[in-house]
Length: 57
Image (cartoon, rainbow, N blue to C red; front, side, top):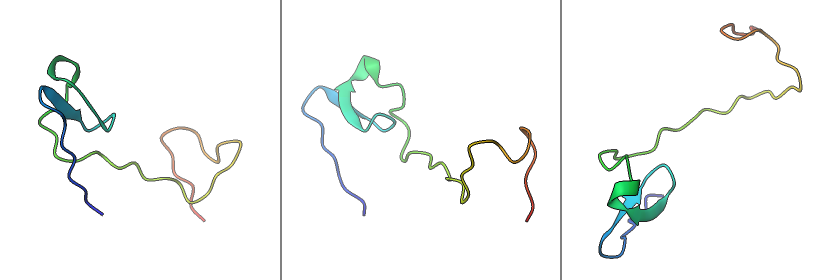
């Protein structure tokens, strides 16, 4: 679930790294959530299609 994270005084939360860091090191202060990347349902050692194409079943 959702969890509040509070950084010590002088530090800011880096949503990409999921850690507290100095303000100069945090480049994503305005982001409210982290982009979720969808994992493929099927994993193969070799790609089914060339880049830019989808495989239909």
